[in-house]
Image (tube, rainbow, N blue to C red):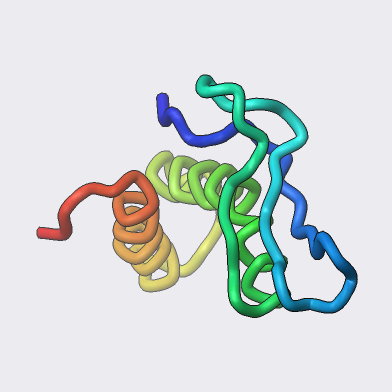
Length: 97
């Protein structure tokens, strides 16, 4: 189990000017912190706020492709397994092989 800050994450602009966008969690982390990160561009904060949801979705997609539950062409299923596993490993901070 990963120990990242609990989701959901929300992009937030503290002063409404777009100069200090950040991502906040609606629940505190193990350290009692709601703050996830600071960004230079609000759109980056929006993208980052979706990361936990995208991680969960990709985990499910790769698991289904592994079990051949999805009815997909073999090359697409292979791509999902290869690139999906690589993206998940990167998200977990694992070194690429």
